[in-house]
Structures are given as C-alpha cells and as structure tokens.
Image (tube, rainbow, N blue to C red; front, side, top):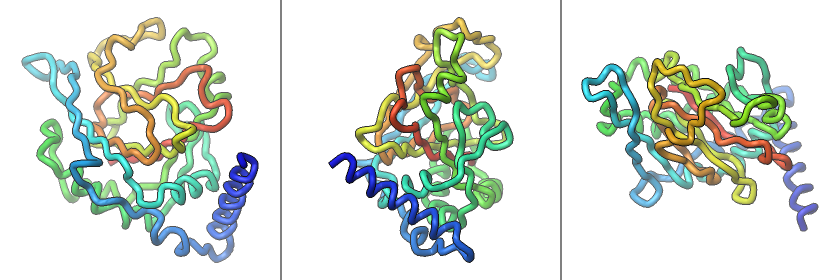
Length: 256
C-alpha cells in the first residue's frame, strides 16, 4: 500500500510539473482553487501572547502576538504537491541563512487568493506593537512570491557539524513587519515545529549558549497550520540531527 501511495504521489507531482512548465503554461487548471482558504472562526484561530525583552521600553519587555490558524487551506494537498514539483533555489540571494533550499515562484493566483485574508489578519488591533499601513502593505504584497523552505537531513548535517545545538534562531524584520509560515508536511511526516524566544536585542548569543531557557512558545508542526507573527520576534525551526531522513521539512513562508 505504501508503494502504491508513493507511486500516486510521484505521478501527481510529475503531472503538475508538466502542466506548469509546458509552453504555454497551463496554470489555471490547478491555481484557481489551489490557494483558497477556509473561513476564519473561533475553532481554527488562536491568538498567543508571548513575552519578549525590549530595550526600547521602560519596563524592559513587551508582549508580542502570534496568530495560529489550523486548517488554513481548503486544498493543502494541491499546495504541497505544487511545492514539491517546483525547482529548488539555493544561495544567499534566495535563501539568506536558511538551512536548506527554497522554492521561489511567481504566482499571481496565490497573491490574489491570499491577499484578503492576510490584509484582514494584519489589520487587527491585537498587533499593539505594529501600525498597519494599507499602501505599504499592498506594495509589499504585490511582490510576494510563492516560497517554500525545503530542509533535508543532509542540509542539517552540512550546517551543524561542530555545534552542540542546531541553532536556527533569527528575526525576519529587515524591511518587514509581519512574517508567516504554513506547515506542508503531512501528519505522518510532522516533527518538531518552530520555537519563539525572548531575546535581548544587543545580547551576543554564541553557539555555546543554550537557548532552551528562552523559549516562550512552541508552535508544534501540524499539517496545514498557518502561523503569523511579528517579524521582530526571534524564532527558529526546530531541527536536530535525527530529523528528516526520509522526507524534507516543508514550510511555506511569507514576509509582509
């Protein structure tokens, strides 16, 4: 049965690749419904409040918000298969300091379908540390690409050869106010997730520092769950040397 499922998965990925990359591309067949999202409600939306250090606040700390939305896409399997069919990019231009490679595809259907929900989510009063600017937000969104982080066991081993911990903590705040991710690993593949940390902005965290004591919230990996957070919130993928030997870690990412 496992071989049959794997064969069917490969056939789906190959079909998507052929339709997208033929001349002219036949994108409309898949993209029209692919990026539709489920309605937001009290059952699939949770707002987390996390503590963070801040030298710009008299109290020395601020509270940041994290939105967690389960069952984000109506058709997550299509989004996942599309991601697996795309070419992987590497190098600092596309990946920055990412552990692994990244899908980077221009996709107008994605921008059109997801614009309303992200516009609504980012224009909420819960973001007490951020000011929503309509023109600025839409300008950034017009340049949004379909991006999926792709991390394998080999990527992890290549990156973390001489360190005790697999450090991935960083901020996404260069030119952005919000960032988000959608987990695209299926239930049986899910492992780890994303940690969110409190961190002094001017503290020199070396590779001998155990960040576990600074974890404020862990977003456990769950298929088709979207996590939206302040770009200045220190965070990082949970990785170790035993993970992703059979399949890659897949996370669609957004910077707004």
